[in-house]
Image (tube, rainbow, N blue to C red; front, side):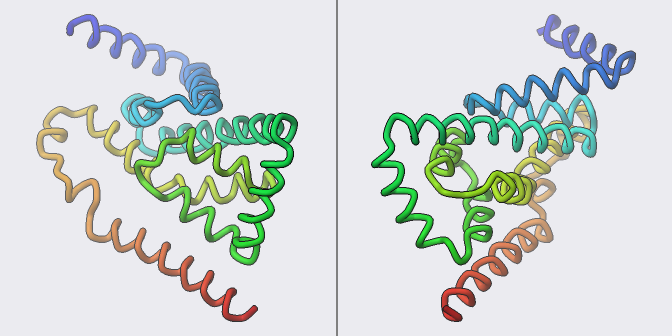
Length: 198
């Protein structure tokens, strides 16, 4: 256990002495980790809060996660198109036609679903006919609540007294939950409005 604390202190010391370099190294690591959509990403996202604080940790995590997922999205889309062209076209056309009028709203809600593995999310999205810009935008908005919460948890580990006092209500406060419900409700209303209008 002592080795673990020594290792954490070593990383913190390097961050203090070489903030930009360690920030970039963490970003590259998160980028490739997310590009392969390996399970356990939330642990590293929490560690950015511990090492870099809430704001820098959030920026580092959200950019690494979104652009790493974009790399996976591009390669898997290319793979599906080349290896399974008929299945890709059939699935992509069916789903894209269904969500075409409200694709942004659907994709944001999809990204906000907690517990769904990143690899499964990215695989599903790679089968859709969506543009890279829409992918980035919906991922940025959809991932933000869970990334911010995870970074906040990691930040709390800096002070063991804060950690002991940390409760579920601190992480998921009434205001936070209302905010998430409000976003989802607005998106659903917008989807229904667009469908009824057409």
